[in-house]
Image 1: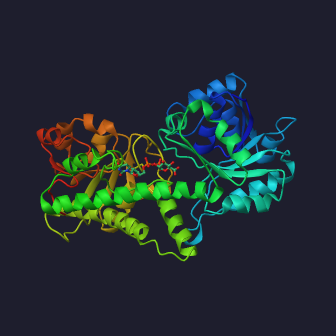
Image 2 (image 1 turned 90 degrees about the vertical axis):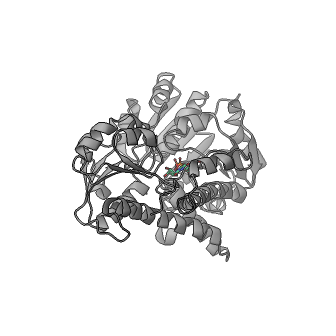
Amino acid sequence: MFVRRIAVVGTGYVGLTTGACLASLGHDVVCADVDAAKVDRLRRGEIDILEPGLAELVAEGIAAGRLSFVLGASAAVRHTEQGPEVVFLCVPTPMGVGGVADLSIVESVLEEVRTALPAGCVVVNKSTVPVGTAERTSELLDRADVAVVSNPEFLREGSAVSDFLNPDRIVVGGSSQDAAERVAALYSRLGAPTVLTDAPSAELVKYAANCFLAMKLSYVNAVAELCDRLGANITDVTEGMGYDKRIGQAFLQPGPGWGGSCLPKDTSAMLQLADAADFEFRLIRATIDTNTRQRQRMVEKVRLAVTGRRGGSLSRKRIALFGLTFKAGTDDLRDSPALAVAALLRQAGAELVGYDPALRPDNPHRDLAAITLVDDPYVAAKDAEAVVILTEWPEFRSLDWAHLAEVAARPTVIDTRNLLDPAVARRGGFEWIGLGKNQPA
Ligand code: UGA
């Protein structure tokens, strides 16, 4: 295997995971960020995201002299005398006006490094970017001696290191076959199937995959609703579906809606992409609408459980929310379905007390302002009219449900993740309400 000199611009969960994992594969990696304090912390091996195994890899990379951190993209490009052979762009591409991905950070990085890039190097777009960005990147660089390829990432927050080192596939696309092959070779030790293609196809793979996952979840949430209405059990239905290899068991767990920093952004961006290509992608529109409706449906479940009737008032009802992050295993609150449900409950007049194992009560996130955050689930449940499980933290299973029933005003749990064993909750004295378990809202 060739050891390559690699620069990674951006040290968010994608950039830092990419940098640390490529270093662990033997490459020489320098990572850049614009946040000086963060760069200082990273140099000391301190990371500020919850990502299992990442801190260890960063420490190993630093100790082995294969991983370093610098302030600013141009410092990364000038880090060695010869300059990097490959530059990964891992900067944010947030949802901009009208759901279109905002590429201003990518553009400013390109402007910063344009003239300093050594001849023959390859610029890799790893951020999720609209189809056509590789071509636009080439135009902005305006360097015939620098190739641009798209190499989308498929990392899940909370398992990014393991996803990177055990990939289902590597996708690399660009107009230069040689450049695409050089980038694919960086991962050769991982032995994953590799798709070498053109840039637009590689760019579209990422959107098509994330939108498919979102569609799968909206579908399963809709089937769960049908289960509630028809007297069927969603767990058995999805198990029965999932044994079909064409469907698979993964990503069939109903919930309060899908969220996070990727699926909502990418489904919106896909709609825009389609719109710009004069194609009405109704399936994605329905996927998003079903998700919005799912959050409202969770509120109706709470309303029925607490007031005993549809349309009952939640005004001044104290509700305990268990789990606020967008999924378990992360402290990320971006586009969290739990927070969306909380906002709707608040609008309905409920008083909210929240507990999340990954959040401290002094968390400054603005969407937490309407929730009294506590660091003890039993305090959260005290005098509550209902406990609502919104994130699938496994530790909720081993809480003392009998004790929670004692402190709550009404021992009712609305389990929007079907996380608990209903028998355990019931033994503790709780009425357990799940999703797709023959309990219509
Ligand atoms: C997602 C994709 O899974 C990754 O493949 C992709 O690389 C990443 O986006 C990205 O674009 O960077 P992530 O946002 O970390 O990863 O989150 P997921 O694990 O996919 O979960 C997304 C949402 O779906 C969460 O709210 C989660 O709770 C929900 N979900 C997931 C369910 O409700 N049920 C399931 O069965 C699975």
